[in-house]
Length: 67
Image: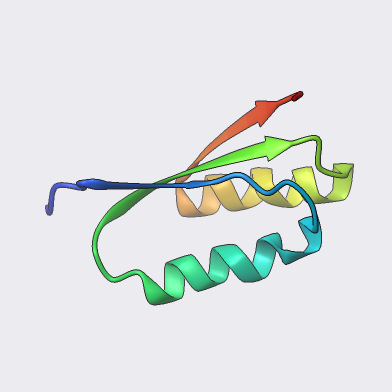
């Protein structure tokens, strides 16, 4: 197993509708092993549920911030 030396942090501030496209792009275009941390900042409920499913399926860390 290749050791992961890169952590990608995603923290959208607006335009939550771009999250799916953004995550798919990261997974499609990043060839080196990486850990992903997604910081959810008060996203709409439907978006939050989608993120929770994706984090389980893809294995990335999902954090919540009320800021």
